[in-house]
Amino acid sequence: MACAHGWLTEAGDLAFSIDASNLVFGRGALAEVGDHVRAICVQSASSKPRVALFTDRFVGALEHVAIARASLEAAGLDVAVYDAVAIEPTDASFLAAAEFAREGRFDAYVSVGGGSVIDTCKAAILYATYPADFLTYVNKPVGAGVAVPGPLPPHVACPTTCGTGSETTGIAVCDVLALEAKTGIASRRLRPTLALVDPACTATLPASVVAASGFDVLCHALESYTARPHRARARPERPSARPMSQGANPWSDLGSLEALRLGGSFLERAVRDASDVEAREKLTWAASLAGIAFGNAGVHLPHGMAYAVAGLVKDFHMPGYPDGAPMVPHGVSVVVNAPSVFRFTAAACPERHIEGAALLGADVRGAAGPADAGEVLASALERLMKATGIPRGLDAIGYDDDDIDALVGGTIVQKRLLDNAPVAVAEPELAALFRGAMHVSGDRR
Ligand SMILES: [Fe+2]
Image (tube, rainbow, N blue to C red; front, side):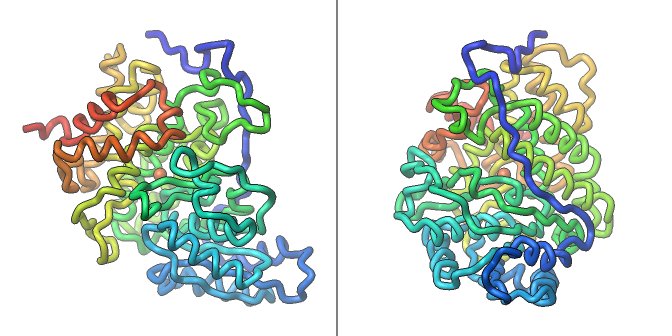
């Protein structure tokens, strides 16, 4: 079976870059945050540096924020809490947070929460430091894609879930309300100064939150591993302009493979039993590894399609998530597309699809060609989705075939993600992928 991953052309970008994340990982690490921030602020002119602590009102009520705040205050820092982060951030909520940051003139920032909190903190720091119209820094074609002009103040990101990997990436995602589009800002300068990952924070997460977050991890790893190889992407105009979504490369492969191995071994256990400390810790480490991988490779079609799936939500609510407006959890919006996508992309790199399936626990003996490779990986994901109670198929979250045009319309603008796929796609291919994602294969009517 031919698999030319990485060796497709000598005309492409032969180099790849590694943007390392500074990471502290371990049980109890959250209580270290004060000392780390104090050390980062060592050059501050103030004897009592000012620190903004970002969270949302749900995480703010948990002990995590109290632990972080006590640690910061014990280190002699002046702390101001911002707990108005939106569960699904928008351009308006990003700019409201930026106003808080601008007025506070902080020396450093700490975010404690899920991806929404960390992303909001990144955006607040950016717009407070280099004010501009909102769409200035937003990815093309939705925004102007202007480069972040210079360095940003320090940001220590402390995730309380085990999925998004936002603590290790330079990406911030939001809804642009006027355009009804979900998109993001991507810059190496947005990457947090330090990721402080404490797996003890996951002990109180409901099973459905762990499942949704866990599938986000698996998709970060699978998409990074099967992304267009970096050698197949055209060389950048200047070496310093090489994108973060540079495609699969040897560095991102390391994190992807280990994250898949850990996910295959521990996802079901972590969902089934909140007291399984080992499983939740291993899944949290997988999330960090997958974040490092996709922060250096980029994700592709499942995430690109997810923006539309989440943005066009009708009345779906996921058990275990806060009541309120209808919302498809990020990991669910991604993984519902994944089996359909991997059946399609397997032809580009069948060996990588089979390897991914094997790490997720599938029996891949006899999987010999592109058709087998796509099916074996799609089936492995569908089995895990069933075992963990995650909605399977777009129909399970309220969509039907009449929605496909709108879903395609919301996806075709995600150029950064679509360009990172191993197979070129346009509207007809995306429509076919959404049709394939409507029902789980075994449940087709
Ligand atoms: Fe994700």
